[in-house]
Image (cartoon, rainbow, N blue to C red; front, side, top):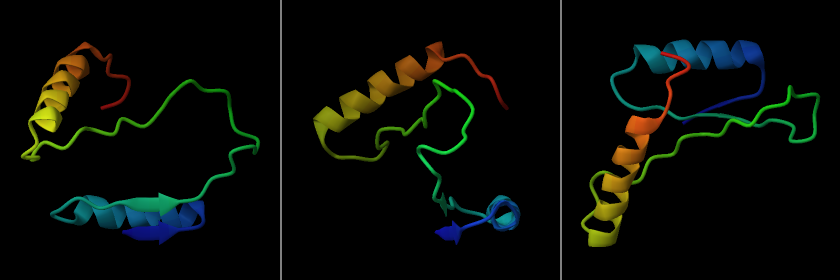
Length: 75
């Protein structure tokens, strides 16, 4: 995990994450009540793909099906 506190630190952490060969989480705190532009977006947090629980496996299949219906805004 890379913890950042400024935009410049975020940019450096992003470059480091992209250059790596595995997943990296970048943690940056934001101000919930700050001067943020209005948005109805959210983070897409997937269901575990490797769980042994049948309920989680079903939830993952439902997630994949729902993901197909999403519109891609960024690539």
